[in-house]
Image (tube, rainbow, N blue to C red; front, side, top):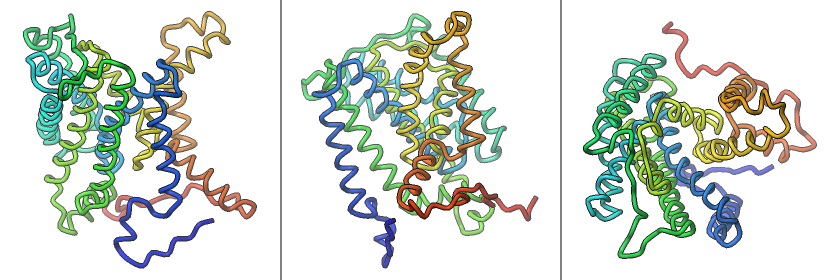
Length: 358
């Protein structure tokens, strides 16, 4: 088992805690770069979707996992970014400028949505964001002159400096670069005073306010950054499908995004990627499992929703820390073997919020 003795603050906020992190993450980066030459085109397309959903998951993880503000309308930010990208690229704007505008407009909408978060929280905030998502979906369907209505809107492959990312391999590398930049940005944000303020608000708003943290400013900032990342993911999502319609950004999409970070592991950057892998691979696994089920069950239209619900309940009851939490336990078991103690991971009550004020 590895013991790290920290002697400076810089060592505490360093991204790579030790040489093992550098080795394994470098190996992961090499594997991702080599994927187009190793993986078939279908699995490369699925890996591209994982990267796109991971970008959106990073934003939602920042909002829900690190700030403690849950959103049930996050698909609306995804749609704002997608439609902004579709409209601007259709007008002949460059890809990079359109992507920046998609992120900026989504962030501006996030600020507006974040205003209710100043007065409500918990289930009431979820209801407010849910209402916003339903309103935006209706706007997408009714504003036919801009969005194309229910007929949808087509997009062309992105172009940068005359080079078109029309192949699966080239678009994969584009998504990979944006995902790496987004991940590094979130990691650096979390180790900054702003990120520590987010975590303080999540743990206890009263304690954070007593320490001089401006709740309204940081909650609104968290919503805007989360919405901006969702807008970037929505722009890439639109280019990948090359067609978007309002029904792609409904309440079910918002639930899928929330399910992604809960199962991946709330409060961890790794959880956004693990949740994205789960979200993309689960439909494939369900399709494979249908062959082993009776026709009355395998062909039922609500099978996927039932499986998602059962998996979510199982994680909430038996593994609240998600897939990343399970990996941490397995890693600790391997490091401590054969000195593993049975009650090491016994769940204990954690006082994240002050019970004295209830």
